[in-house]
Image (cartoon, rainbow, N blue to C red; front, side, top):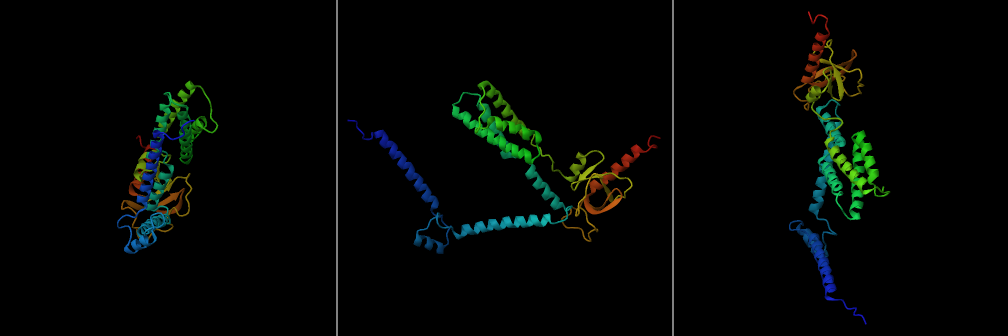
Length: 313
């Protein structure tokens, strides 16, 4: 007859499993207990009377902190709504719109860059010999990262990266796997790793968010970009007026219909009230950086001198 009694090794394994379970239970119980000062005197008596724990009772202080966090979030939303309700040329509104566009269009944040580096490392590590499970996991990781990059590329209008990572996702997809020779996969692993790393370098936003002065210096020699519109030199305009490019389509609310009686408090001191024209038509008033207005008139005078037939005499 065979001896079905458990040997000492099996008993030790069972004891260790029980110890792990008891330790986990103890930790969970400790986490459920209320910390010192977390409860009010009335709550302490209530908890003792009914045997309550953190699993079935939420202290007033915790609820208060949650309410404060909710109120802070609501305040931020109200502040944003107040700023966005202002005139489209308001400096704070322009800055808020730029920051929000930057968040939406940022192709590579720090977390995304770290993810791509990790995926590239996993791909390169696949060149060594591993169990088959590693390559299955590699497919899931690479395909998920590629799909995420495709979504980011679509949001940021990175057309090339959009199509490149669609191909990567298809090649490494684990649902309908593509079977190739080991040598071919080695080349694809290196190429895919290089693409992930290269996409980090090309992490610039489609619309770079810079200050008005930087935008003017970055623009072409004969234009300036400000308040999301392009302005061009016009030597026939007085110093307090600028010309909106004919290709631009101004919207209602872009400019003041009448000059404001008082200077808004949030307008920077170096901004000047300026008249805006387009093809001889007066559009309205707006506050512009003085360097923008002066720069356009300087360019207008310079262009006029170059084009004058008497400039060479």
